[in-house]
Image (tube, rainbow, N blue to C red):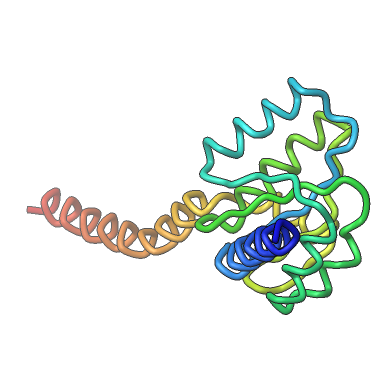
Length: 167
């Protein structure tokens, strides 16, 4: 009976990870080998503040979850100590935080990621990390949308000022 309970508990763990893989906007896989306790705590703190879940998981469990989630392309990076960051909201935040942390701490290595159901490699994760945040992109878009209206308002004001001077 104990054996059946262990198998059931492991299957539930696989189901939970599979659900997280399917539901998260971005999932980043890293090798954390060599991080000391203080560094790992700091990394977890930064990720938690951004609303990102960070877990150390066994590769066999992850392989079963990727098979269930139909993301088997990710299996090639599931070697050695593996930690995984799940983000349900911001697609750029986990890549940005982990990439910045990896630049400061050589022990952390980016392995790959799943972004909106698409598996990407280390180079693409780094490129994703260089993108501005969602708020930054929205700010840029708003600025672009406001420019024509602002220019039109300035032109109308210039015409009104010129007419006022002529009168």
